[in-house]
Length: 316
Image (cartoon, rainbow, N blue to C red; front, side, top):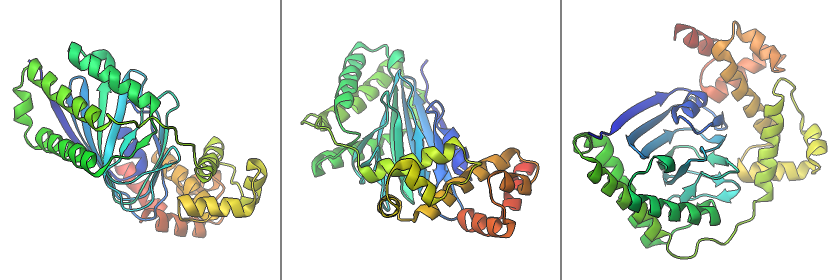
């Protein structure tokens, strides 16, 4: 008899959080300062998985959804600036994460997201397969952040909220359901999304230049995090002026280029500490030569000292 498997997992770092959504091949970098906490509640209904992701800090995400799956959802809480592949994001929009090009997403502080993942290869219901094929084609031609009108926004968010409460809080209704009932629920969910997208949402949106600069900076740092880059070096590598770098980081992240570079490197350090033998080794490996300044910046960024992080991982 088909059943629904529900889980609730919590994390204390963005790197732990990135691993919670299995299969999405994600990497997270914490941008907002302070102790991180996150969670992922998910319910697997065979071919469809619902998840509720929450994070308290601003996070720069990059990843990709497997080719045989469709990934999308609705942010139900957006506290500040947010961008998906350069497109500005607001609460109530429908965000599309699947696609051959992967995704880049800046999620804001105090973020909550209702997500849906559909395993296309696992669908046995012909009606659901046809509806899912239509949805996939529509997503392939649409922008990544689809703006809904007030009625569509209410219908979709209310529907997903109801599904979330039902699958998370009333598990027994799904555990005892047979396949036909589960297929009906899945068709209802896909049909609701298709109804909301019945108007024209296919007009392309060009990437924002400032977003491209921010992601290029991140790629450069991640390609060689042990070699600290300066703002002057970035202007040469990216072929832009110092003012352009400043405007891009302020516009997208509300931080200076120097702060952004430091946040990215500190995020790499925090991940490496998980398997390190000493804090000093990691700090110097990533070019933090002044250990007192490093410890201060680390504490401001993550809400705890680097030695405290290392101690906690050793206990675990």
